[in-house]
Amino acid sequence: LEGVDKLLRGIAVYRKRDPVDSEESEFVQNMFDCLCSMMLLPTHQVNFGKVQGLELMIRMMRERKFSANLALKLADHAVRHCPANCQIFVDKLGLKVLFAMFMKKGPRAKGKAAVREGEEHVTSIIQSLCRYCTGTAVARALNKFTENRFEKLERLLEMHEEYTQAVREADAARLRGEVQQIDHELELDPEEQLYLDRCDAGLFTLQQVDVILVRLANMGNRQVADELLRLLGVKGVSVEEVLETVSEYCSHLDDSAKVERDELRGFAAALARPEKQSKEEAPREDEKRGKAEKRPADEKRERKNAGEEQRAEKNEKRPREEKRDKKDVGEEEKHEKDAKRPKEEKREKKERKEPKGRKDEKEERR
Image 1 (cartoon, rainbow, N blue to C red):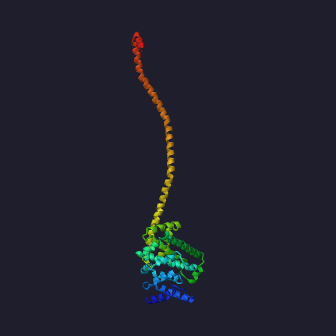
Image 2 (image 1 turned 90 degrees about the vertical axis):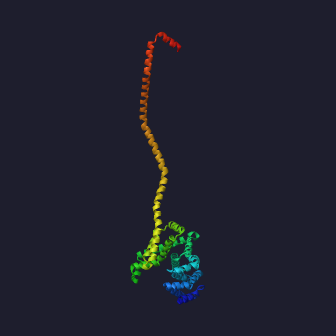
Image 3 (image 1 turned 90 degrees about the horizontal axis):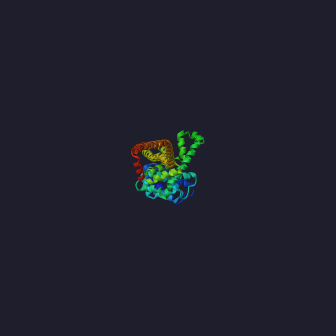
Protein backbone atom coordinates (compact mmCIF):
# COMPACT_ATOMS: atom_id res chain seq x y z
CA LEU A 1 0.00 0.00 0.00
CA GLU A 2 2.84 2.41 0.83
CA GLY A 3 4.59 1.70 -2.48
CA VAL A 4 1.41 2.41 -4.47
CA ASP A 5 0.82 5.58 -2.49
CA LYS A 6 4.38 6.87 -3.02
CA LEU A 7 4.27 6.26 -6.76
CA LEU A 8 0.91 8.02 -7.00
CA ARG A 9 2.36 11.02 -5.17
CA GLY A 10 5.24 11.04 -7.64
CA ILE A 11 3.02 11.13 -10.76
CA ALA A 12 0.45 13.53 -9.24
CA VAL A 13 2.87 16.40 -9.85
CA TYR A 14 2.38 15.96 -13.60
CA ARG A 15 -1.39 16.24 -13.56
CA LYS A 16 -1.34 19.85 -14.76
CA ARG A 17 2.15 20.23 -16.18
CA ASP A 18 4.29 18.38 -18.71
CA PRO A 19 7.86 17.13 -18.19
CA VAL A 20 10.56 19.62 -19.08
CA ASP A 21 12.89 17.34 -21.05
CA SER A 22 13.21 13.80 -22.34
CA GLU A 23 14.85 12.52 -19.14
CA GLU A 24 11.96 13.74 -17.05
CA SER A 25 9.51 12.26 -19.54
CA GLU A 26 11.23 8.90 -19.23
CA PHE A 27 11.12 9.19 -15.44
CA VAL A 28 7.34 9.78 -15.52
CA GLN A 29 6.81 6.89 -17.91
CA ASN A 30 8.83 4.58 -15.65
CA MET A 31 6.66 5.45 -12.66
CA PHE A 32 3.50 4.70 -14.65
CA ASP A 33 5.01 1.41 -15.89
CA CYS A 34 5.83 0.42 -12.30
CA LEU A 35 2.21 1.02 -11.27
CA CYS A 36 0.93 -0.94 -14.30
CA SER A 37 3.12 -3.90 -13.31
CA MET A 38 1.82 -3.72 -9.76
CA MET A 39 -1.78 -3.88 -11.03
CA LEU A 40 -1.16 -7.49 -12.09
CA LEU A 41 -1.81 -8.45 -8.45
CA PRO A 42 -5.41 -8.14 -7.21
CA THR A 43 -4.31 -6.83 -3.82
CA HIS A 44 -2.49 -3.94 -5.42
CA GLN A 45 -5.51 -3.19 -7.56
CA VAL A 46 -7.70 -2.92 -4.46
CA ASN A 47 -5.11 -0.74 -2.72
CA PHE A 48 -4.92 1.47 -5.80
CA GLY A 49 -8.65 2.10 -5.53
CA LYS A 50 -8.48 2.74 -1.79
CA VAL A 51 -5.81 5.47 -2.06
CA GLN A 52 -7.89 7.30 -4.70
CA GLY A 53 -5.68 6.25 -7.58
CA LEU A 54 -8.60 6.05 -10.01
CA GLU A 55 -9.77 9.57 -9.10
CA LEU A 56 -6.28 10.85 -9.95
CA MET A 57 -6.28 8.97 -13.28
CA ILE A 58 -9.66 10.43 -14.23
CA ARG A 59 -8.43 13.96 -13.47
CA MET A 60 -5.29 13.40 -15.55
CA MET A 61 -7.37 12.06 -18.46
CA ARG A 62 -9.56 15.14 -18.22
CA GLU A 63 -6.60 17.55 -18.30
CA ARG A 64 -5.29 16.05 -21.58
CA LYS A 65 -1.67 16.80 -20.73
CA PHE A 66 1.38 14.61 -21.34
CA SER A 67 0.26 12.14 -18.68
CA ALA A 68 -3.30 11.68 -20.09
CA ASN A 69 -2.51 8.62 -22.24
CA LEU A 70 -0.35 7.14 -19.47
CA ALA A 71 -3.21 7.61 -17.01
CA LEU A 72 -5.57 5.89 -19.47
CA LYS A 73 -3.23 2.92 -19.68
CA LEU A 74 -2.91 2.69 -15.90
CA ALA A 75 -6.69 2.96 -15.43
CA ASP A 76 -7.09 0.06 -17.87
CA HIS A 77 -4.76 -2.11 -15.80
CA ALA A 78 -6.48 -1.02 -12.57
CA VAL A 79 -10.03 -1.99 -13.60
CA ARG A 80 -9.14 -5.20 -15.44
CA HIS A 81 -10.63 -8.19 -13.57
CA CYS A 82 -11.42 -5.93 -10.58
CA PRO A 83 -15.17 -5.35 -9.94
CA ALA A 84 -14.52 -2.96 -7.05
CA ASN A 85 -12.42 -0.61 -9.17
CA CYS A 86 -14.99 -0.75 -11.99
CA GLN A 87 -17.65 0.50 -9.57
CA ILE A 88 -15.32 3.25 -8.32
CA PHE A 89 -14.50 4.35 -11.88
CA VAL A 90 -18.21 4.89 -12.67
CA ASP A 91 -19.00 6.49 -9.30
CA LYS A 92 -16.17 9.02 -9.72
CA LEU A 93 -17.62 10.20 -13.07
CA GLY A 94 -15.08 8.45 -15.24
CA LEU A 95 -17.60 7.61 -17.98
CA LYS A 96 -17.76 11.17 -19.32
CA VAL A 97 -14.05 11.53 -19.97
CA LEU A 98 -13.72 7.91 -21.12
CA PHE A 99 -16.41 8.17 -23.80
CA ALA A 100 -15.08 11.57 -24.88
CA MET A 101 -11.84 9.77 -25.73
CA PHE A 102 -13.82 6.96 -27.31
CA MET A 103 -15.58 9.43 -29.64
CA LYS A 104 -12.25 11.20 -30.40
CA LYS A 105 -13.32 14.48 -28.85
CA GLY A 106 -10.62 16.90 -27.75
CA PRO A 107 -6.91 16.86 -28.64
CA ARG A 108 -5.83 13.91 -30.73
CA ALA A 109 -2.77 11.77 -30.10
CA LYS A 110 0.21 12.23 -32.39
CA GLY A 111 0.95 9.28 -34.61
CA LYS A 112 -1.06 6.27 -35.72
CA ALA A 113 0.54 4.00 -33.13
CA ALA A 114 -0.45 6.32 -30.27
CA VAL A 115 -4.03 6.52 -31.58
CA ARG A 116 -4.31 2.74 -31.77
CA GLU A 117 -2.84 2.28 -28.32
CA GLY A 118 -5.36 4.74 -26.89
CA GLU A 119 -8.27 2.99 -28.62
CA GLU A 120 -7.04 -0.35 -27.29
CA HIS A 121 -7.11 0.87 -23.68
CA VAL A 122 -10.46 2.67 -24.09
CA THR A 123 -12.20 -0.43 -25.47
CA SER A 124 -10.60 -2.62 -22.80
CA ILE A 125 -11.94 -0.36 -20.03
CA ILE A 126 -15.44 -0.31 -21.57
CA GLN A 127 -15.40 -4.10 -21.82
CA SER A 128 -14.40 -4.38 -18.15
CA LEU A 129 -17.17 -1.98 -17.10
CA CYS A 130 -19.79 -3.92 -19.09
CA ARG A 131 -18.65 -7.15 -17.48
CA TYR A 132 -18.08 -6.23 -13.82
CA CYS A 133 -20.38 -3.27 -13.07
CA THR A 134 -23.71 -3.96 -11.38
CA GLY A 135 -26.82 -2.04 -10.39
CA THR A 136 -26.82 1.68 -11.15
CA ALA A 137 -23.25 1.62 -12.49
CA VAL A 138 -23.99 -0.83 -15.31
CA ALA A 139 -27.20 1.07 -16.15
CA ARG A 140 -25.19 4.29 -16.47
CA ALA A 141 -22.63 2.58 -18.69
CA LEU A 142 -25.36 1.10 -20.88
CA ASN A 143 -27.18 4.42 -21.07
CA LYS A 144 -24.08 5.97 -22.67
CA PHE A 145 -24.69 3.87 -25.78
CA THR A 146 -28.24 5.22 -26.20
CA GLU A 147 -27.21 8.89 -26.23
CA ASN A 148 -27.37 11.00 -29.41
CA ARG A 149 -29.21 8.41 -31.46
CA PHE A 150 -26.85 5.52 -30.61
CA GLU A 151 -23.78 7.29 -32.01
CA LYS A 152 -21.49 5.21 -29.80
CA LEU A 153 -22.87 1.99 -31.26
CA GLU A 154 -22.06 3.34 -34.70
CA ARG A 155 -18.56 4.19 -33.50
CA LEU A 156 -18.12 0.59 -32.29
CA LEU A 157 -19.06 -0.77 -35.72
CA GLU A 158 -16.71 1.69 -37.43
CA MET A 159 -13.89 0.42 -35.24
CA HIS A 160 -14.89 -3.16 -36.06
CA GLU A 161 -14.57 -2.47 -39.78
CA GLU A 162 -11.29 -0.56 -39.35
CA TYR A 163 -9.53 -3.21 -37.28
CA THR A 164 -10.94 -6.10 -39.30
CA GLN A 165 -9.34 -4.58 -42.38
CA ALA A 166 -6.05 -4.05 -40.52
CA VAL A 167 -5.93 -7.69 -39.38
CA ARG A 168 -6.72 -8.94 -42.90
CA GLU A 169 -3.89 -6.84 -44.31
CA ALA A 170 -1.51 -8.34 -41.74
CA ASP A 171 -2.63 -11.84 -42.71
CA ALA A 172 -2.14 -11.04 -46.39
CA ALA A 173 1.37 -9.68 -45.69
CA ARG A 174 2.28 -12.93 -43.94
CA LEU A 175 0.95 -14.99 -46.83
CA ARG A 176 3.11 -12.95 -49.21
CA GLY A 177 6.14 -13.84 -47.08
CA GLU A 178 6.94 -10.29 -46.05
CA VAL A 179 7.52 -11.22 -42.38
CA GLN A 180 8.99 -14.68 -42.87
CA GLN A 181 12.51 -13.43 -42.12
CA ILE A 182 11.44 -12.22 -38.68
CA ASP A 183 10.25 -15.73 -37.83
CA HIS A 184 13.66 -17.26 -38.50
CA GLU A 185 15.51 -14.56 -36.59
CA LEU A 186 13.36 -14.81 -33.46
CA GLU A 187 12.93 -18.62 -33.73
CA LEU A 188 9.32 -18.50 -32.61
CA ASP A 189 6.61 -21.06 -33.15
CA PRO A 190 4.81 -20.17 -36.44
CA GLU A 191 1.36 -20.29 -34.88
CA GLU A 192 2.46 -18.18 -31.92
CA GLN A 193 4.18 -15.67 -34.19
CA LEU A 194 1.08 -15.42 -36.37
CA TYR A 195 -1.11 -14.68 -33.35
CA LEU A 196 1.35 -12.05 -32.06
CA ASP A 197 1.51 -10.39 -35.46
CA ARG A 198 -2.25 -10.24 -35.64
CA CYS A 199 -2.43 -8.77 -32.13
CA ASP A 200 0.10 -6.11 -33.14
CA ALA A 201 -2.05 -5.34 -36.19
CA GLY A 202 -5.09 -4.70 -33.97
CA LEU A 203 -6.58 -8.11 -33.26
CA PHE A 204 -6.82 -7.45 -29.51
CA THR A 205 -8.74 -4.20 -30.05
CA LEU A 206 -11.01 -5.96 -32.56
CA GLN A 207 -11.70 -8.70 -30.02
CA GLN A 208 -12.55 -6.15 -27.32
CA VAL A 209 -14.91 -4.31 -29.69
CA ASP A 210 -16.75 -7.50 -30.65
CA VAL A 211 -16.93 -8.68 -27.03
CA ILE A 212 -18.53 -5.32 -26.14
CA LEU A 213 -21.06 -5.80 -28.97
CA VAL A 214 -21.96 -9.28 -27.72
CA ARG A 215 -22.29 -8.07 -24.13
CA LEU A 216 -24.45 -5.08 -25.11
CA ALA A 217 -26.82 -7.37 -27.00
CA ASN A 218 -27.28 -9.47 -23.82
CA MET A 219 -27.52 -6.79 -21.12
CA GLY A 220 -31.33 -6.79 -21.06
CA ASN A 221 -31.95 -3.53 -22.94
CA ARG A 222 -34.19 -4.45 -25.88
CA GLN A 223 -33.81 -1.01 -27.45
CA VAL A 224 -30.00 -1.30 -27.60
CA ALA A 225 -30.15 -4.91 -28.85
CA ASP A 226 -32.60 -4.07 -31.67
CA GLU A 227 -30.62 -1.01 -32.71
CA LEU A 228 -27.42 -3.03 -32.69
CA LEU A 229 -28.87 -5.65 -35.04
CA ARG A 230 -30.24 -2.89 -37.29
CA LEU A 231 -26.87 -1.12 -37.48
CA LEU A 232 -25.12 -4.42 -38.25
CA GLY A 233 -27.41 -4.77 -41.25
CA VAL A 234 -26.92 -1.15 -42.32
CA LYS A 235 -23.12 -1.36 -42.07
CA GLY A 236 -23.06 -4.72 -43.85
CA VAL A 237 -21.42 -6.49 -40.91
CA SER A 238 -22.66 -10.05 -40.44
CA VAL A 239 -23.34 -11.46 -36.99
CA GLU A 240 -21.27 -14.52 -37.93
CA GLU A 241 -18.22 -12.28 -38.43
CA VAL A 242 -18.59 -10.85 -34.91
CA LEU A 243 -19.18 -14.28 -33.38
CA GLU A 244 -16.12 -15.69 -35.16
CA THR A 245 -13.90 -13.06 -33.54
CA VAL A 246 -15.43 -13.74 -30.11
CA SER A 247 -14.93 -17.47 -30.63
CA GLU A 248 -11.26 -16.91 -31.45
CA TYR A 249 -10.89 -14.78 -28.32
CA CYS A 250 -12.46 -17.53 -26.18
CA SER A 251 -10.21 -20.20 -27.70
CA HIS A 252 -7.11 -18.38 -26.40
CA LEU A 253 -8.40 -18.11 -22.82
CA ASP A 254 -6.90 -20.61 -20.39
CA ASP A 255 -8.65 -22.56 -17.63
CA SER A 256 -8.36 -19.66 -15.19
CA ALA A 257 -10.78 -17.71 -17.38
CA LYS A 258 -13.28 -20.58 -17.74
CA VAL A 259 -16.13 -18.48 -16.30
CA GLU A 260 -15.57 -15.70 -18.81
CA ARG A 261 -15.24 -18.19 -21.67
CA ASP A 262 -18.50 -19.95 -20.83
CA GLU A 263 -20.26 -16.62 -20.33
CA LEU A 264 -19.17 -15.25 -23.71
CA ARG A 265 -20.09 -18.46 -25.51
CA GLY A 266 -23.56 -18.30 -23.98
CA PHE A 267 -23.94 -14.67 -25.06
CA ALA A 268 -22.74 -15.56 -28.56
CA ALA A 269 -25.29 -18.35 -28.84
CA ALA A 270 -28.07 -16.00 -27.68
CA LEU A 271 -27.03 -13.41 -30.29
CA ALA A 272 -26.92 -16.01 -33.06
CA ARG A 273 -30.47 -17.20 -32.29
CA PRO A 274 -32.42 -14.09 -33.43
CA GLU A 275 -30.19 -13.85 -36.51
CA LYS A 276 -31.07 -17.43 -37.42
CA GLN A 277 -34.77 -16.76 -36.90
CA SER A 278 -34.62 -13.66 -39.10
CA LYS A 279 -32.93 -15.68 -41.85
CA GLU A 280 -35.64 -18.35 -41.64
CA GLU A 281 -38.40 -15.75 -41.71
CA ALA A 282 -36.93 -13.86 -44.67
CA PRO A 283 -37.78 -16.57 -47.29
CA ARG A 284 -41.29 -16.83 -45.84
CA GLU A 285 -41.80 -13.10 -46.17
CA ASP A 286 -40.45 -13.18 -49.72
CA GLU A 287 -42.79 -16.05 -50.52
CA LYS A 288 -45.74 -14.15 -49.05
CA ARG A 289 -44.73 -11.02 -50.93
CA GLY A 290 -44.41 -13.04 -54.15
CA LYS A 291 -47.83 -14.58 -53.62
CA ALA A 292 -49.35 -11.18 -52.97
CA GLU A 293 -47.79 -9.84 -56.17
CA LYS A 294 -48.87 -12.86 -58.21
CA ARG A 295 -52.44 -12.91 -56.87
CA PRO A 296 -53.97 -10.23 -59.18
CA ALA A 297 -52.36 -11.76 -62.28
CA ASP A 298 -53.41 -15.26 -61.22
CA GLU A 299 -56.97 -14.13 -60.58
CA LYS A 300 -57.13 -12.46 -64.00
CA ARG A 301 -55.71 -15.57 -65.64
CA GLU A 302 -58.17 -17.78 -63.76
CA ARG A 303 -61.10 -15.59 -64.81
CA LYS A 304 -59.92 -15.72 -68.43
CA ASN A 305 -59.54 -19.50 -68.30
CA ALA A 306 -62.96 -19.86 -66.67
CA GLY A 307 -64.55 -17.72 -69.41
CA GLU A 308 -62.92 -19.79 -72.14
CA GLU A 309 -64.07 -23.02 -70.50
CA GLN A 310 -67.62 -21.71 -70.25
CA ARG A 311 -67.61 -20.71 -73.92
CA ALA A 312 -66.23 -24.12 -74.91
CA GLU A 313 -68.93 -25.84 -72.86
CA LYS A 314 -71.61 -23.70 -74.50
CA ASN A 315 -70.26 -24.50 -77.95
CA GLU A 316 -70.28 -28.19 -77.12
CA LYS A 317 -73.79 -28.06 -75.68
CA ARG A 318 -75.31 -26.02 -78.52
CA PRO A 319 -75.58 -28.86 -81.16
CA ARG A 320 -76.98 -31.20 -78.52
CA GLU A 321 -79.49 -28.63 -77.33
CA GLU A 322 -80.56 -27.79 -80.92
CA LYS A 323 -81.01 -31.48 -81.65
CA ARG A 324 -82.91 -31.95 -78.41
CA ASP A 325 -85.05 -28.89 -79.13
CA LYS A 326 -85.91 -30.17 -82.61
CA LYS A 327 -86.76 -33.54 -81.16
CA ASP A 328 -88.93 -31.93 -78.47
CA VAL A 329 -90.69 -29.75 -81.06
CA GLY A 330 -91.42 -32.79 -83.26
CA GLU A 331 -92.77 -34.74 -80.32
CA GLU A 332 -94.96 -31.80 -79.25
CA GLU A 333 -96.37 -31.46 -82.76
CA LYS A 334 -97.02 -35.16 -82.86
CA HIS A 335 -98.78 -35.00 -79.50
CA GLU A 336 -100.86 -32.08 -80.68
CA LYS A 337 -101.82 -33.94 -83.84
CA ASP A 338 -102.67 -37.05 -81.86
CA ALA A 339 -104.71 -34.93 -79.47
CA LYS A 340 -106.59 -33.18 -82.31
CA ARG A 341 -107.29 -36.32 -84.33
CA PRO A 342 -110.02 -37.87 -82.06
CA LYS A 343 -111.86 -34.53 -81.88
CA GLU A 344 -111.91 -34.14 -85.67
CA GLU A 345 -113.00 -37.73 -86.17
CA LYS A 346 -115.78 -37.26 -83.65
CA ARG A 347 -116.93 -34.04 -85.30
CA GLU A 348 -116.93 -35.67 -88.72
CA LYS A 349 -119.01 -38.58 -87.46
CA LYS A 350 -121.48 -36.24 -85.88
CA GLU A 351 -121.80 -34.22 -89.05
CA ARG A 352 -122.49 -37.36 -91.01
CA LYS A 353 -125.30 -38.36 -88.66
CA GLU A 354 -127.09 -34.99 -88.57
CA PRO A 355 -129.70 -34.21 -91.34
CA LYS A 356 -128.98 -31.48 -93.86
CA GLY A 357 -131.78 -29.16 -92.63
CA ARG A 358 -130.51 -29.11 -89.09
CA LYS A 359 -127.05 -28.46 -90.43
CA ASP A 360 -128.24 -25.42 -92.27
CA GLU A 361 -130.03 -24.12 -89.16
CA LYS A 362 -126.87 -24.41 -87.14
CA GLU A 363 -124.90 -22.62 -89.76
CA GLU A 364 -127.47 -19.86 -89.82
CA ARG A 365 -127.30 -19.56 -86.02
CA ARG A 366 -123.57 -19.28 -86.21
